[in-house]
Image 1 (tube, helix red, strand yellow):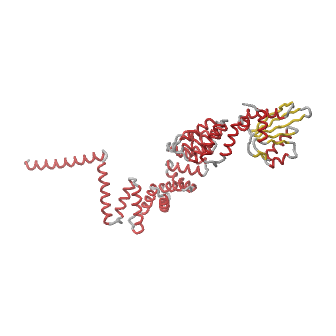
Image 2 (image 1 turned 180 degrees about the horizontal axis):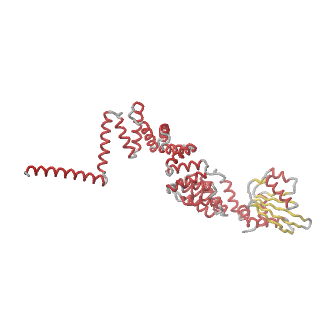
Image 3 (image 1 turned 180 degrees about the vertical axis):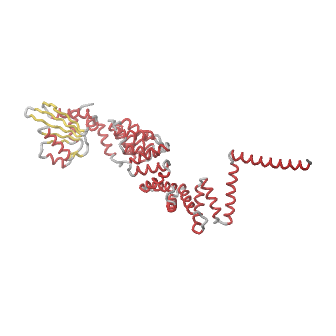
Length: 452
């Protein structure tokens, strides 16, 4: 073989090997991340599209390439503006995919916070493809934001039928059902939502509310207690946890819940006032009247006309100075009955008193039946002590009179920590029933002067 032929073969071999090496190198670059290739592709798209738009601002192809690039990169502001330009061209240019442009324009608008434009765009897109998940879900979300909960539920159920385990769909469907007071359905949906996204605190909060509304207080309390430390939902969760424990008469634990809520920095004024109000109530129920009065003063300093704070503050200060009245109104049932027994024992001077029966009705009032004997007369008398500090009407007196007849008492004596209405006083005028309002009750309490 001649030398020129050999040189020619070697040259061809070198060229082939070089081509193979370049090909392998490019493959390695793509496998290792290919950042440079992507940057060049993006730069090329931007350069070419902008060059075309400089020559023709209405170049649909260039606008479409830019819009698609921005949408894929989730640059929603630029995507929204570019799709908006394409929408303007759609009526006069059949090269524009009007459905895709309308849908992407709406979704970009939604992510940019232009909710009205997003809503209109999604409605238009739904006319073309009513069964598309992306439309049903996002339109359902917007209806939820608009508080159109029935429409939201309908749309989100459509979306859920297409993607049953989609977390966002379950979240807003469950919360919409809750707001419609469909607690049982909401509970099932929200449980699935929390399973899909365990960090979804809003769904956890709504789930706890569903448990509460369905009478499952322990489950609700467990979730609310868990959420007490959350910077956003913590104050409300603390309030609800405290309310549940107050209902369970666990006042010390309820006070602790309210304290946790008040420690939060991001505390809305209305939540702060309600936390303090409920804390004062728990202190009162726990017979810590001085602490209740202190909290009520704090509320009064912030908002004097908040609920019945002024009245409660006056009552708390009164109770702080009168231990017997405090026991009568808010003391344990056993201490309350003990005060009542002492009032009965001291009611008639120079009389022999024998208690025949004591009956306490739901810690609201106590009936003490006593056989009384003096030098001049003897009778069976029924005493009723009502703990309520408001107005006592005719209905309670009718019940008392019925009870007098049932036990065959000769007369009745009724005490209350409030006032008797005119109707109540008119009812007993022709009956053997004596009435003693708060002022007269306090005289009898001073008379016995008992410390507990």
